[in-house]
Length: 210
Image 1 (cartoon, helix red, strand yellow):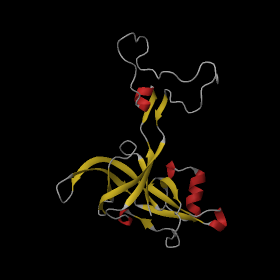
Image 2 (tube, rainbow, N blue to C red):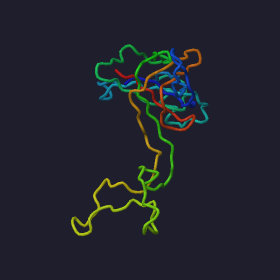
Image 3 (tube, helix red, strand yellow):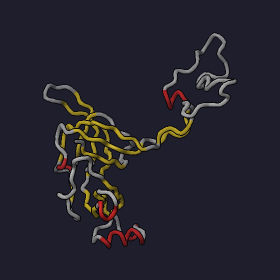
Image 4 (cartoon, one colour):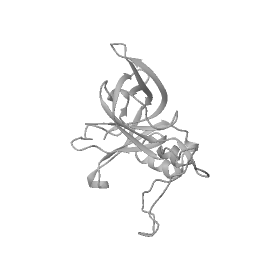
């Protein structure tokens, strides 16, 4: 899906015409430059490679400097590829074009991908919302444990996928079907209804949906 690279600014609220409060997440979307186009003939797939956030040359590795020079492009901190969905075309986009927040419209449906906040090693109550053990009537030693994880004799092993304590967060998460409530083209901001994964200033990918 074609889209933009942006950064999460934070959350606020807007009011609709009836005075109802709408919680929104503010995203600084773009501007992004098209560095190159991936084609079926040359690369085996179609995609647009976008660059986001200018960066000085001293902070760019030699291989990446060669990549930017090959396409006569500026130097960017972030590079991401966006593949078209079924029925979408990339023929209307050219190398060097700048994509901005105005490519989105109010009430449009979008998908947003980002890395969730890292919570570290957590137990099953925080990680999966387990209720925990009762606090009285004989319970001792384990109040926040996960309980039984399998059978003792047959099959004498723990099945894959059993919910246990472990790393929580710090994973790529995609939230689909979010509604664009407002687009501020002057400041390059879009506001989507609800929350999205990630901390403030985290990198987000905004995809247009069909």
